Length: 313
Image 1 (cartoon, rainbow, N blue to C red):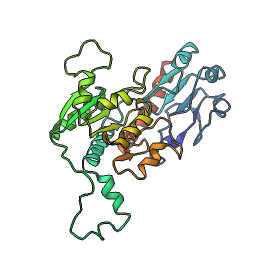
Image 2 (cartoon, rainbow, N blue to C red; image 1 turned 90 degrees about the horizontal axis):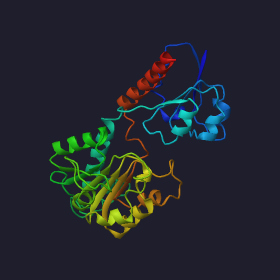
Image 3 (cartoon, helix red, strand yellow; image 1 turned 60 degrees about the vertical axis):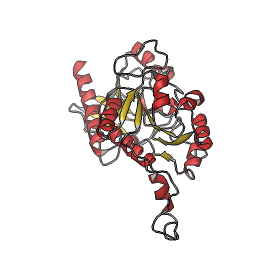
Image 4 (tube, helix red, strand yellow; image 1 turned 45 degrees about the horizontal axis):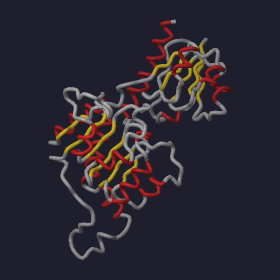
C-alpha cells in the first residue's frame, strides 16, 4: 500500500480539504514541516504533497522510496528539478487554478491604489472624519482607472486575463517584451518603453535568474513619476530596498504587494514597517490565489495528478 505524506497542510484552507485518491493508501498529514523534519517524515513516503517544503539534492538523496512530489502550487522553486529527474522522482505542479482570482485581486489593488482606499480606511481607526469641519476632506490623491495605461510584465494565463479585464475598464494595456530582447514580438512593447509609459506596472512573470530583481533602482527610475507598482507574482522579482526608496522619495505613487522576498516576512521587514504608516503601500499576505473556487480547483487537480501518476506506473 502506498504511503502519502502531506507535509504542510496549512498551505490549504481547512474548509477545503484535498480529496483522497481513489486507490488504497495510507495518508499522513502534518500542518507544517521544517527543513530538519523533512527527511524523517518523508522517509517512508511513496508520494509527498507539499507547497513550500524544500527538496534539494541532499534531501532527495535520502529518500530512495520517494516516487512523486505533488505540489499544491504552480511554482517549483522549492524543488531541485534536475536532482529529482536524475533520482527518478516525478514532480507534478498545478497550473490554471487561479486564472480568475489573481486577476480580480490585481484589479482590486488597482482601484485601491488609484482611489487611495488604504488611506481612507486607515483614517476610520481615528475620528478624523468626525473632526473634519466640512462634509469631506482631500488628504489623499484620487485618479481615474479609466484612461490609465497598464504595463503587464508576463503575458501568460494571468497576465493576459489581467489585460483583458483592464481593457474592459477602458485602460490602455501594454505587454512588455523581455528585458534583453533584440527584437519585439507582435503584441508586445519594448521593455523600457512600457516602464516609461505605464501609469501602473503589474508583474506576472516567472521567477528565473533573468527576472530576479527585475524591478530594481534602475528600472524604478525609468518608471513615470507617480506610477504604481503591483506584484502578485514572486517576491524576488522586486528589489525591496529599492522599492521602499522609490516610495519614500515620492518617485513612485504607490505599491501593492501580495508577495515578498521572504515569506512569512520578519516583523522588522522595512516594507512591513513602512506599510503601517504609508497610505500608498498595500501588502496582502500571499492570498491573491486563494478564493474558494480557486482552492477547490487546486485540490482537485492535486488529487488528479496523483491518480494519473499512479495509473502510469
